[in-house]
Image (cartoon, rainbow, N blue to C red; front, top):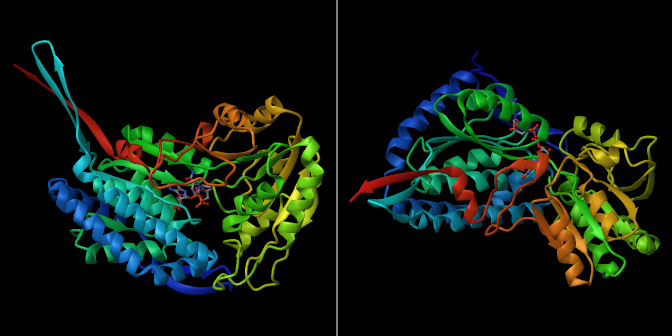
Length: 456
Ligand code: NAD
């Protein structure tokens, strides 16, 4: 079935107004895009590595030049504060600049063996399908697009239907920067049509998916039909572990940003705040003051720290977590409508199997829980199906490292909220995903390793 003629109404979460109409692709458009990408791949893969690098560098420079207009678009489309959006567009430019350094460094090995020598090559895979979420639309897209193009692949990107605007701009920027037509295409449309067709398509070599664990499971099962390579960056329920010997003021100052950043719509949100029991009262007092002081409001205002949620439906889902199993211990403010506002909220659970403890909320709700000692903190932190990120706050360096090693998660930080750096690997353990984005390791997920033996 084709959806030619359909269009997507793009809504601004802060005003509930339609800000754009975007053509919605269906299966036929997906097939056409894949065929075009396959053709473009045949030449792009043979473009000299240095020339591929030049195009990526030009994309980085153009994104930087247009940072303010891209950031405004992202802010209006997602509702995120303009200061955050500007930071993310900076990440997009830096990601293209970083991977511009890799085409000429994608080398293999020579391995002497009896009777000859083996040589390894990192070959591009072909057509890569990227399926991305709405929370960090362009940043997450760039984490796939840049390494995939650097390695010589062609890319068809399906952004989330709610937030396609900056991806469409990136396609225009890439063409102007000299990327040959067809090497990078953006197809806005539903996951059930464009997404599933990309996953099923025999000419798509790999799917890079970022989104919920539920959809990730469906994609993983479907991809087995063509033994498709898949990387999955999925959900999280990360722990922010605060020991009594931590600098409590610093930990409590960082905690709101770690869970309410992007209005909590962050896969890395440290949404379970685990506090050593002896420090609980003091920590809660500090945290409550900081949450009350959060500036929630107009995302276009540079002073704003938190904007609205993405849709009314999502707000209703977040609100459903404030049920009989939770006690609200602190709450910030939020504007009245229009806009999908939700005040930053801190709760304590009445039981350890409350939904607020076990499920990803993806909204500005932090769940604070006590622990007794190091062993208990590790056990609670690991008591989840997820394993994306986490933080450890303590002034004891050996304890910090011991706990970081013991927590089953892909990306941890000590005395910091930090999750993502372009030069370092990022991804999840357990049901938070398969594979790694960013850093040099990401290139392994966009190349196939070939081994050639020459008898001498
Ligand atoms: P989602 O899973 O609903 O959608 C993600 C993308 O998948 C969208 O483009 C959607 O259209 C598409 N899709 C939906 N159904 C599909 C299907 N059957 N086949 C193929 N594609 C399909 O996720 P979301 O609501 O956009 O994003 C929120 C989720 O993403 C959260 O769980 C969050 O933790 C996760 N996330 C993870 C990371 C990470 O790096 N680990 C980063 C951002 C978001």
